[in-house]
Image (cartoon, rainbow, N blue to C red; front, side, top):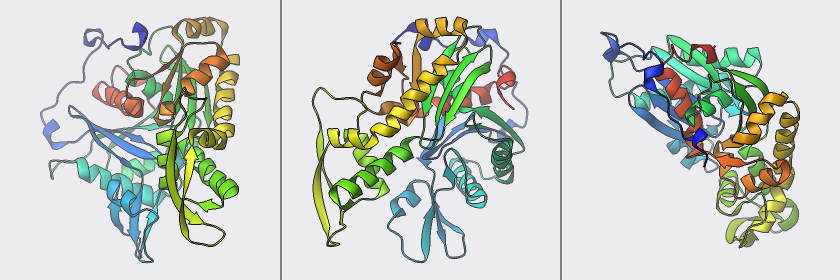
Length: 354
């Protein structure tokens, strides 16, 4: 991988946030509030939580479990418990449950019972409306944060992979999350061009579910579809095609049964959504100013987010655009690492937050 993507920030080039006398009373955190997973970074501690964005509620709408515990209950609950994913397409769909989820996850990472949350940096999709931004800010404030800062996901991803976003150089980031795909060209601490496509890993799961229902008369759940996508899903043909056995309910006679599925089947199921992502990247390149296009030609396209792990996606984008494509190291945590870097030095990154 090119050195431009492995460069580290030089602490000598900026003023570190000053330590206060009463800092021990506070827990400052950065949150990647994702559709599929929520990650929390705590000041001076690094990433302290990475759990599914889901809450289990009882009949009084009180939270029974959040994160991993709630995920285990998903699609297996009885009438007294329901599981809710409060974020859809990268934005808050259920304001009240989102607040409960944030509170529950903050409670998990607080090691000192007497501490409160002073500063919170939350990343949001670049294409959300002002109303949706306000909903995120309000949820964070109601969850106990005294100061809330919002940062666009592509900017956080760029910082998380080690790019110096203040430079007058163009970088293209493609962050493929659970609910959205964020495509952005970044230079001089700002986003020159951005496109937010409300399509991500969840849509690919739905494609797999619909494919099995339509082609095999087999009904499978979200968790099974996610497992199939992660284990044998691919965007382009593999050197050696993979296969696995999956279980579901026969839609003809209603009984459980198994079915062998190949990576070719999964590729066919998700091809339309994958092509939409690739076409969006091509469209973004067409809208990029020529001087920045020259930079992207030299530096390539950087993939982050869970979707970057889809087998051969980088190869497909490379073949379509004729540009070098790099997958970030640990793409799942790139956004929260960048959000955490902003939290650690708010003065230096003041121009990228709102």
